[in-house]
Length: 85
Image 1 (cartoon, rainbow, N blue to C red):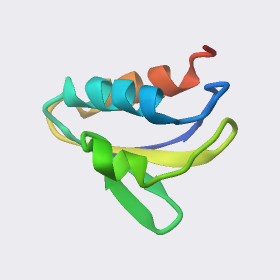
Image 2 (cartoon, rainbow, N blue to C red; image 1 turned 135 degrees about the vertical axis):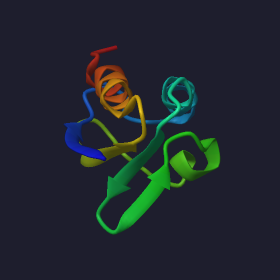
Image 3 (tube, rainbow, N blue to C red; image 1 turned 180 degrees about the vertical axis):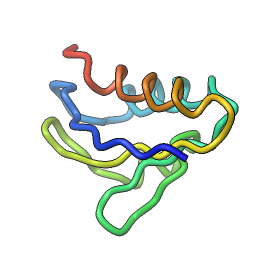
Image 4 (cartoon, rainbow, N blue to C red; image 1 turned 60 degrees about the vertical axis):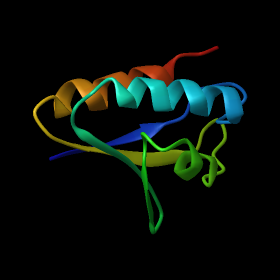
């Protein structure tokens, strides 16, 4: 299992379109991928779960991945959220 803190650098934060793209990114990996914010842990492959989070530019959370491609999963999610768009 890998845990990595990440800061959102998307200018408009996570609204519907970026969340859909993030779910697509997370779904590419066989590992279980979660987003932890405060006391909440959400499956990053669930669009409904991700929509329940309200995160904007500069917000911090932890990406958690567990499985055979966990390193690639964390790197992919971090790369997606770190790109300035």
